[in-house]
Amino acid sequence: MTTKTSLQKTLGTWLTLGVTLLWLLGVIASGVIARHEMNEVFDSALEETAQRILPLAVTDILNRENDTGDQRALALKEHDEYLTYLVRDASGKLLLQSHDADPRIFGAKPREGFSETPTHRIYGEGAISDTLFIEVAEPLGHRREAILDTSLALLTPLVLLIPISLVGVWWVIKRSLRQVVILQQSIETRGGSDLSPVAVDRLPKEFEPTMVSVNRLLERLRRALEAERSFTANSAHELRTPLATALAKLQRLKTEARDAGVKARAGEIEESLRTLSRLSEKLLELAKAEGGSALSENENDLVPILQMITNDYEREAPGRLKLNLPGNRVMSLLDPDAFAILARNLIENALRHGAADRAVHISLTGEGTLRVANAGDVVPPEKLALLRNRFVRSDSKTLGSGIGLAIVDAIATGAGTALNLRSPASGQSGGFEAEVNIVVQHSGV
Image (cartoon, rainbow, N blue to C red; front, side, top):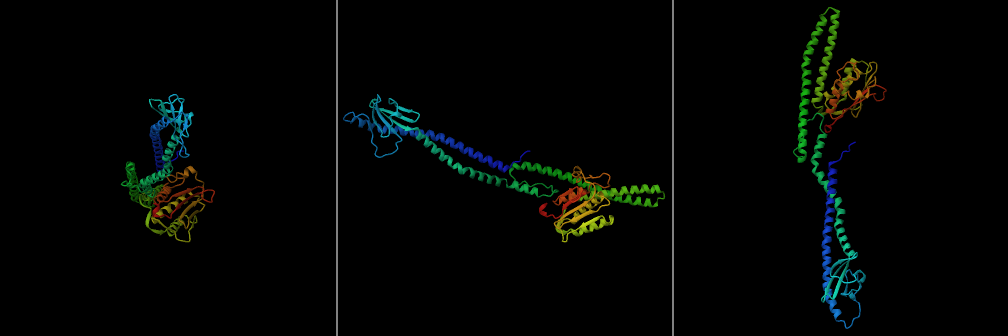
């Protein structure tokens, strides 16, 4: 299963990681440069220290009245001595040393220039025709500590930089994608029949080609649907008059006919013409459901409409309809004509496909949920999923056009609600139930 990722989250995460990585690379580069520069500074300090102390040391040694061996320079006060030095002759005899110097860190004989031991950096310089030498030593740990302190000083802002960068990048991306979010919300709130172009004037340039392609697709779909609806409506409308004329002439012929066989065949043809006429009416209803808005400007009480429709069918099927209405009004923005078409198709479908000796239950709750249920065989799940399609019936032996539930589904979709089908019906071991929420608002479309 593919996990969908958020563009905002992906950009925010990777940009923050990128900024952090660049900062780390900058710190490393700065550390390398700082180490080189600091080594130059420390080496210069070693060299300058040697050159400043050497003349003083030579003067002190030459002015001695007698050779007193190695002498230690006195410190004015106790302190940690980072730079220590020795003054020796060419043979390595110690003549003078700083108060904290350790002769073991120096070589056996003095050397000029820079040298390095595992623990110290040493600079040596000679005087008086290379008969006296001074060597100044500095612990390498002192340099490492200085470089480490510098690197930590560069890394410390990173602790604050990471959360600040994450918040800042997240805010910038969210602000940049605001128009995309608005576009997504406007598309979500559209009705199922709204195929008008999507506004792209305020979108980022990167999204414009995609939305232009989407608008072209929407235009092709709109033209295809309009052509289909126009053909359906025009065909059904053009058939009404010829069918009515043919039915009237056939009824007259049936009345005038004397032969019983002719009358019987005329009756069969009459029933076929009536079926075709009903199909024509259903096609007109379907065209209206798919092409027009299912909502009205003002709210209407749908309880009296359902009562009237139920009374009409009660005359066709006496005793089979059980109506349960709420005690209050049910106000809805659903168009009264669209609701009448929806209710008629649900009741007609329940009567036609339910058991002839069992009741059809029609209920409307105060919250606006309309349920129509009949008794009969259970509709298999694979057939139940197809009943919204045109010209699909659960039982091929039953007469009917097969588009009643397609009309109901089109009206429900146009109103921003949904048609729910169940088999068996709620609270029954068999039968079929259709449920629609008829309380809709403009904001849901």
